Length: 461
Image (tube, rainbow, N blue to C red; front, side, top):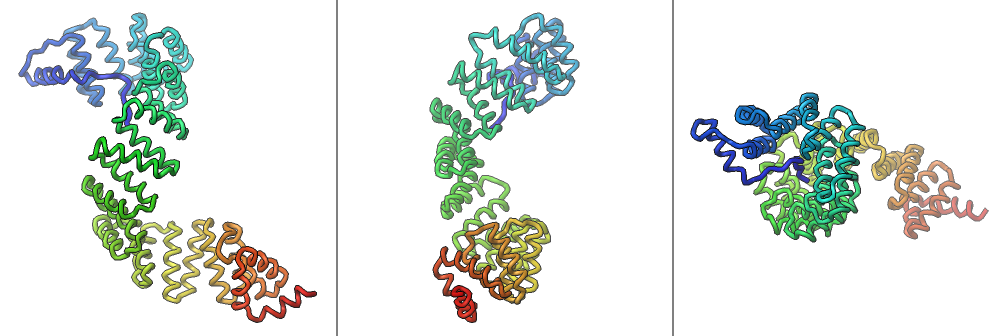
């Protein structure tokens, strides 16, 4: 969500800004009243043009040397640029005036100077004294705390403002933002829905709803929200790419390709968009098209792990193992800690019938990430084929502990135990395997035809 400064600027002041800047070039008269100077200073503050702001304030003092408004703006500038002590000295002299903006700025100065108790006391006093625009005061105060990364205090102020006026759109935007920062997605969604109920054309709220629904994996609702956002502003590139991501999650790969193609026309990061498109074609098993987009991305941005590994995976799927190995090794050169790349390299070696190299790659993968049940099972299978049954058992057991639902894992454990003569353990795991799938019995006997008599004798004893 876009952030706002807690001071407001009248956009109708453009004529004043134009006249002031013409004055600086010597093409217009040089008198401005205090209100006009206030608009000029706030304009530069909003733009972050601190040097221009400072010049405008100094110019203003030449015309209005005793202006408390300009003193207040100078304090605001000091707070913005980090001169908190200077700001505090000015505000201390002005505080007797009881001016609202002075008090708001003074609270900010207190907080920046770690005068927390003083800030809380003044905040409480202002809130107690306000009975007409409490929501706007809470919003102004919340902006200060948001700017200081104190989301909890900001949230409390915004909730108080919401209780006073639950239709203040600007406050609702900030309240939703604070809920989101607190990972309270349910309340963030509720507040954004309130916004669109008040203003159905609030594209920012629709976009935020899309992001929030995406975060909680409510992808259909996310898609609906992004489509509303784009119906309001069809040129919103960020909403476009997010819509593509949602369609991808919904397995709407053809629609996602179309959306990503639209996004590609809106952005300069075409190499990244080509990866998105390539992933869609890969999921559609249109590997040649996927390789085309991955390679186009790779040509523009050579240090590109996703594109290079994507090419390798597509070659793997087409059983083009030598070609796959080349690209997967390139990917590993870019990121040697990518555990999945080592798995793909192992699969390439398996296809090339080099089981020793495959085993080495699998072992490298699990040294990076132990949470890989499929990889442990693949390692165990290699050990089983080599006749190294003890190592096979160790890896099968790890795989089973990580994921007991792996297909026929218990049958393979039974085979490995049978091969080392641990018949009781073999029978135990074989029974479990048959309970899960009766086909395990037949497969076990096919792989261990010499087991029939031994197991029957063991059972009948």
